[in-house]
Amino acid sequence: MSNITNTIEGEEATRRDFLHIAAAGGAGVGAVMAAWPFIDQMNPAADTLALASVEVDLSAIGEGEAVIVKWRGKPIFIRHRTQAEIEEANAVDVAALPDQQSDADRIKSGHEKWLVVTGICTHLGCVPLGSKSGDEKGEFGGWFCPCHGSHYDTSGRIRKGPAPLNLAVPEYAFLSDTTIKIG
Amino acid sequence: MAKWQTIKPENKALAWVEERLPVLALVSNVVGPDTPTPRNLNYFWNFGSLAGLMLVVQLISGIVLAMHYTPDTSLAFDSVERIMRDVNYGWLIRYMHANGASFFFIAVYIHILRGLYYGSYKAPREVLWMLGLVIFLLMMATAFMGYVLPWGQMSFWGATVITNLFSAVPVVGEDIVTLLWGGFSVDNPTLKRFFSLHYLLPFVITGVVILHIWAKKVSDSGNPLGVEVQSSADQIPFHPFYTIKDAFGVGVFFFVFAAFIFYDPNAMGHPDNYIPADPLVTPDSIVPEWYFLPFYAILRSITFDIGIPFTDIVIIPAKLLGVIAMFAAIIILFFLPWLDTSKVRSTRFRPTYRYFFWFLVADMVLLTIVGGKKPEGIWPLLGLIGTAYYFAHFLVIMPLLGKIEKTLPLPESIAKACAPKAQAAE
Image (spheres, one colour):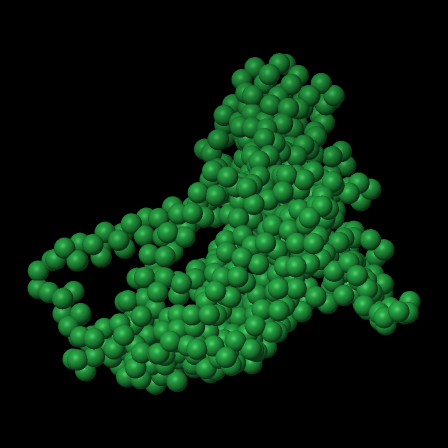
């Protein structure tokens, strides 16, 4: 077999070398292209994506009440804030917060009474208490996470405890004064 | 058996691993430069590696389909439709799997016919041949159960008909069928166990494939001349010669495979299987997948009882006889090494047997056609003739012809017949 190896391993690049590299390269590109469908099938399917946005009717939520709706498998807190709660959220010194954000950045202007946040504690993913009447709302009147004791205020901002960030505000828009579309 | 070569890689880390677990040597000795292989293998020897590759295609696409499929009678059909419509590339992966089964059988049938033509079942390769038949039987079971999973009309009625075969077993037949079903008809328990077994069996097949390749390593590849290897002049290393030849074969085979997947993915399927299973309505005609048709034809061809002549005593009823004939059609292949009495392996040197080989192929084609037709008119008679000839080939023609046939002179060696120059250099 040695004479065969010698022809392949000549000193200069030969037509045979070129053919080897071209064939191996072509096969490699083909393999990667063939692999892609098998990877992409794990991404969300069309029917999963079709359910990626939900519309919520706000008219049934009374002042001071909150509801939890499910969006993309996650809880979304929608809170109809009282005037006192809005003022409380605005009165905070933003510079003193762990995650600096003003209340205005977390709501849609003109709809100050509506707070829409993702109900997942930014610490380790538990669902904080505070949406139901009778729930523990924490020291700042917003939400309280029972897992490791994070306190959120009436703007959903982290005020005390191990969570690093404010409750996330999902992508949403007002379709009318009483209807929002999340996602 | 060819000598086992060890490998000492120059890289120290590799050498350290190789000393403790010689995987490089394993590859090199089975499909590598240390695997001396007859120099005269023709393209029919490509179909072993193609069958192995199709097993891999079926495993990968099947594992992916199982991520999206639901084995429940109320959800199975819809979950398959969801794969077709919603899952990213789901249509592609399912068509790969469905057509992959057909192409797996195409590769295996050509592989088996190659073995029949060139006498690959003869000593010392009997166990190699029988392991191949075990793989074939496991494939049939796997393919049958896989076809049930989409829970369409053909799935349901195919499952009903095939499981009912076991009711032909005397005394305990009905009990066996109830046991297979997990109920009193093909239903949810049946679907769930079929799914479980359909996932399991491919790994059993993989295990037997490893034994099959091991047996090949022990007895070495056969070759078109059927003359055993005598010196290294008869051989070339598996790598690069046959790895490249196999790779070229893969290119051609996948070209045809892809043509079916992309241009006519349902050509080998049955439209009735896109109708959800209905236990109250049997489709106009129940047809198995094409690769089962010859055996289905044999099953249906037996419509007479065997009894004591001139009395009404039935020893074997027609239903049981049909089932026995169908299973015997495959079991008989296990005895081929002894049924073939010829001392010459390759049909190339058996001028008379060559005709009978092609008669057998024509008979299988006939049975395939009969299996796809409704059993009326001329077809049942043709099926019976075809079945009779199939068994006559193995039980009468092969044993007798081997004794009386005047064979052609065999070449002295592979090298002498195929590469006189290499012989001279030796």
